[in-house]
Length: 617
Image 1: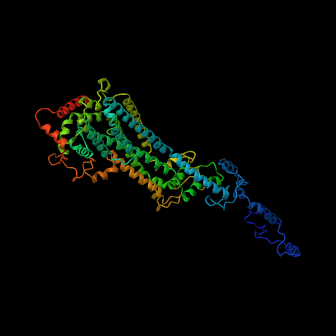
Image 2: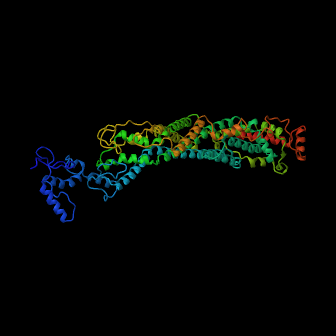
Image 3: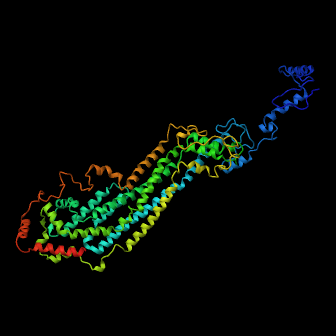
């Protein structure tokens, strides 16, 4: 009899020991009977019967080998169930057809640890795609605040500013119709074109504000010069000569210079600010749509769903483990952070300008009063301006109307319609201006709100991994360091946390990152931010970067007159300027003006000038 008390463990497969402890051979008669039996069946020779304990051991060995390691070793006594995994997998919307009920060997796994598992190859592939989609959604949802900040604030600011321009134009039109009547209505396109160009500039049109404003005053001078000298006929060439001397004559006083400074600074700041909101919106929208690399997808699968394959679907990743995965997957986005912060700082500076010295309300609210003041300056200095223009551009021809039978009062009344003092506004206040101020107050609150939201968006891209990993739906949280998934099992995560940015991921233990190949798409967004930041800095200083080179190449004064040294004189030299040829009618007028006494022409000029000065005051 054997001295063994129980069968040996399966992997040893030993036969019973003899009395001395050495393996004892089977009884000889068993070998002979077994050999004879196998030969009769045509088999090869070999042992047919073993000792009874050894035979029982061989019969029990196959089912023991088929059990999970824990059951085979006698630890738990049975195979681990995949019930929780099936339930969690089904909750993701997947079919349970390929999900095993108990753990199986994991040699087929490509990402998760190749140990006993609840995942088939099909499950691993589906969960890998699921991890990619969830990561993309996580980034998009986390960046929702930044994107909506730029989208909603851009919409509000744009609406306020457009309404401000519309109301300013309406206010000027109402005031000038009441004040100047037909005189304004016959020349209203000059003012309409001014607001059209201002709107076109604001919406991104290729408009040089200084040149546009210079053209406005030049056109206004041409119209006014004809109105204060109705007894003459002016050709296009003559009026062009008049407009060239706008800056030197200063017929409108100092109003054009002051208004130019105020309008250019305010509109440059407003347009650049709304462009900055547009760029911020576009960059945030583009960068938030991530395209994870294959290495990132593997790391995401290992972090989010390898616990499923290990039969631990309720165990969440360790916080530090999540940070390393996210820092590797979002390495290029983190490199956006430096330029993004500079961009936000520049936006805040321009917002302060909009609230302070470049306040658009200070420009658009009284613009009608300022232009009216300029027109009155022209009226008060009409005789001096006309005399200097006649000296510089020559004596014009008399208008054909002077040779008609119409009387002087009739000619005057067709051009100027007097109004009662009650009809003229005494101040810039009124219903339309009250509406302007209401709009601007709302707009100012909007700018303040934008500033607060912009401050919150600083360092967004470098803190994005931390924002994602502190989500309780993603990780176990920073306070739980032991009962969390570390990429292999439920235990503490030991590797150190990587720093931010692409170059710092060279030793990332979780994500395979090629630091020699920066994302070209992210680099394009960095360049867009850099260009916009440069524009914002120029706008803060009152400069329009789009036209700096143009103004430098032309005259240093930036008057926009379009004159060159060989065409326009640098000084208003009346003596050297040749007058146009004088015909017989003009010689008669000049001769009569030199005779003693008052001619009809002289009396007419004095009468019109006197009435105009009273009217425009």
